[in-house]
Image (cartoon, rainbow, N blue to C red; front, side):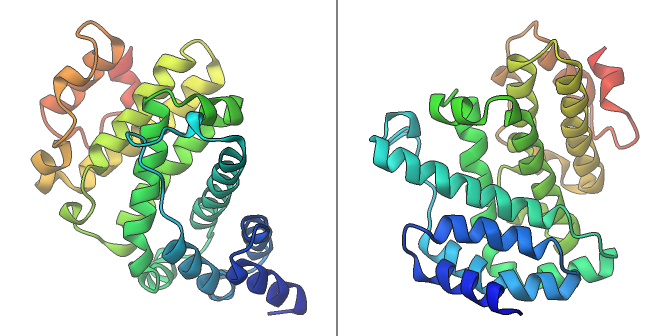
Amino acid sequence: MNSRHKTLVRRVLSGDQSSNQALRELCLEAKTLRGSERFALISPAFLHFFSHRKPPTLQEKPPNLLPLSEERLALDTFRAILAMFDIFLNVGDPPRQIRQIMSSFTETIPHFITWASYLVEAFVENDLLTVRLLGDSSLHTLSIVSELLLAIIFATEQEIHAIKGVGNLIFRVFIYGLLVEPHSSSSLEKLDEITLSGVNLIGKMSENWEEFCTGAPDSFWPAESLASSLWKSCFIAGPPCRVHPTSHAA
């Protein structure tokens, strides 16, 4: 750890107004490192962040209704969370090493899931602040969230019951993107990736198939929508482990 790294870590641990920016910078620095070195750098900052930051409850105080000062803080925190998510998706190490690295982060996994749930909920509820601030990157953000959920399960070999509602999250991600940007080719490609993530996850957890689908009822989507057709043909019948999602969406 060089002097810049130490400075950034101290700024994160200070918890002052610059801590979120410092965390994002630290994540960028970490991307230049390999495997265990990367996570040794960010581990103290991650643990500190999650012990002090809790996502807001949308039902109590939607982010788009926050005072401007709190809105900026919420955005800053949001960006820091995304930077941390991105770290876990750019590891570039063998699966065994990823499992070893993730095993040291088991106490943060519930916090990751909580934040992932919050982000998806914000999109689904058409949170104006989040959508406005992210703009064209909203689908990219959602794909990060869905891939993160998969990464946690694959890398830590978590049982599906340990991650409540993950099936619902994956499909709400898909539906949100489908309704927001249905005509963009890049968006369709991204939605395809997100949906395939859900298909792969169901395939891996097929023995827990019914539990996986808990919380994502058929009535969640309009009866005649493309999403409803996807849900009925793909998932009500059972886990489609080897089926590409676009074949069902056609």
